Length: 318
Image (tube, rainbow, N blue to C red; front, side, top):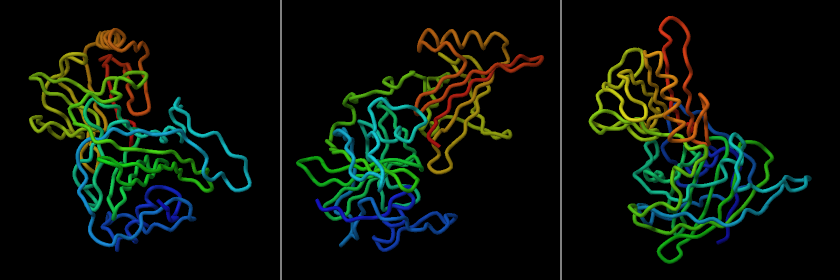
């Protein structure tokens, strides 16, 4: 496929250009006008008609080795992203999840299909994942809001194959390129990599009495009752790893209502040591805080007369 050229920079730039190419897509009312950046990355071309198909189902993602496509002008090429990512660096956004699922329309722009990671599969560091079919091409976007992947693929058998490019929200930056393929698979097939592959392994769910659970980056279960008391509180008691407390706070993502963080409070002065011991036995965590690219855990001990313990699980993709 011959790729035309478009702006480089944050994914918002790419989306603005996509909207212009498609005749104008809806955007958030509060969003300011987005300037056009210097041209570097491949664009989504203008559609000659409505999307040729609706995206759906689960797919396994296969990628090739990174190569330098365009170094920064006047500079020697920098090393390409490595499979051994260092959390907190821009290159941590260079890896896409190995199992994805095409869900429903993106909440604030229905021309795109939202990409989600099926339950139990390896999560992604990206908080903005979407796809769009234009003519005979599939375009994918994986973004942290500062850096990520933009890909263009063509039909190959039952799946798709094409090229992915890494971008970062700074100018100039080195454009790295790799092959990418999507193969349709049953959603109940065990994923090629599970959430347990993240190191250190950190729990992402809090179990409640009655068999319910609150899980990071998923909506609250419909059966869960909540109340407002300066914060959003869940009515119920925890059990299992984080049992037992009846003070459960959650914070939801503004768009989509996904759980961003879960906070538990324990009035018991001995809870701190007990929870740390459980985390050490199950996950090998011995410190009062830990994080991997998508999950953070903290078990600080509050001073004062109550000696209260709080526990926070948070998704780092904000």
